Length: 140
Image 1: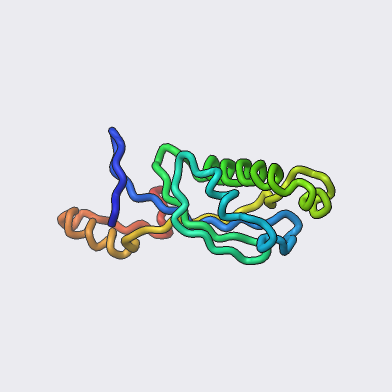
Image 2: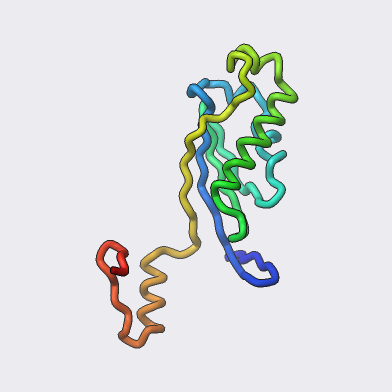
């Protein structure tokens, strides 16, 4: 496990993100998507990029101070700007002269080095019998 540290925290946060091209256009193989996405990584790190024709899978490492919605916004905004600055003539015909590239929807999930079961087992050893699993994760 490689934890990152800041002045006030120690963390290892990774996200699996899937971004889809607007209108599901199968065009990702025509552009330098890796450079476009790398252009946007100022406050977080991209550790994996997997490309298909109409969507991209990313694994992102980020500090807890940056929300997932901010990461998605930065990825989409900066990569769209970069792609349009490099490939404007090509993209004009694909997206009808609108400066868009990504669909507004996205998928994300967190990745961890340990499972929920491992955390529960650890807590059971630390709670001295006072751990109470709640049904469906509710606290009410």
